[in-house]
Length: 151
Image (cartoon, rainbow, N blue to C red; front, side, top):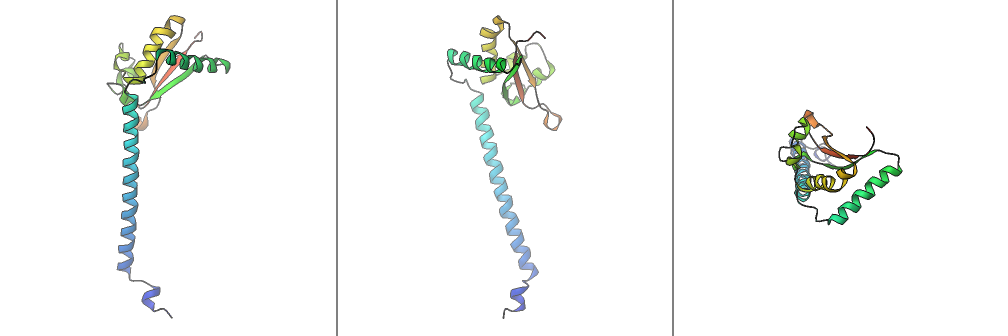
């Protein structure tokens, strides 16, 4: 028959065991948080550089997105969403709708604006860059919308 010490372990030993388990959980959380942060950093790094797509590929992609929206009865479509860190001012000029806000764009968001300027604007399309979420009350992601309705 097991002894009392086997059935009811010493409280000090239990506290040590619990502290070790808690430390293991904290270590795993920190490891996962670091991995998520590294993935986010890599994504932002990739988005901040040119896409590498040719003009023809970009035009075809825009055409596909617009045609799908039209088939669904829409007069506008969000074509892109990106972190405000891809703006040189973290989206401040976009949020304030300041003249020259487009000069704060980098990477792919800048490519989209150039594609609109070169090919879509002359054909009557409009573009809007706006902050679309405010985590913790501060500007977050930027959405890019192309529209073609009468409004």
